[in-house]
Image 1 (tube, rainbow, N blue to C red):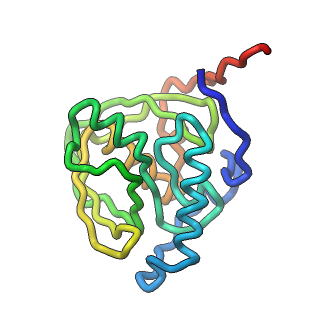
Image 2 (cartoon, one colour):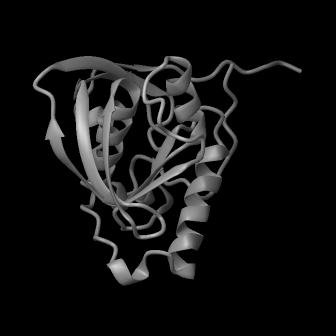
Length: 181
């Protein structure tokens, strides 16, 4: 059972910011107090939900090209024996861009913190390569497959004003079961 906590930081599906193409972060701002505060808010909102594995800045109302992948997601991936070179700490990507995709695609089940309790299947590339900056301003190139590739594509969609429901098939509303006390 997944309980959702009410988090004022998260914007929901009808918020106009979720439909905007985000603005690139100026390189001089990476590592700034302001940007670190935004990243802190993203982290707080993501971890307030038991099933939060990643979040993009627009989901907390910020029009910036930033997303974060939680150590929860990385732990799930590591258990499956994939992407073993990642440390188990949250990953922050600033101004990310997918630069290579596999031809092979797969339908994958998705949900979203901003489109709560809707789930559907989205056709995603099985592998992607992404270029970005980390939270310290270092250039990074990351190759990913499986769940991590799916997360990268989902979060970059957010940065381009696209919700998974725009692409999903067989969408179902599956609210959490409530416990009677």
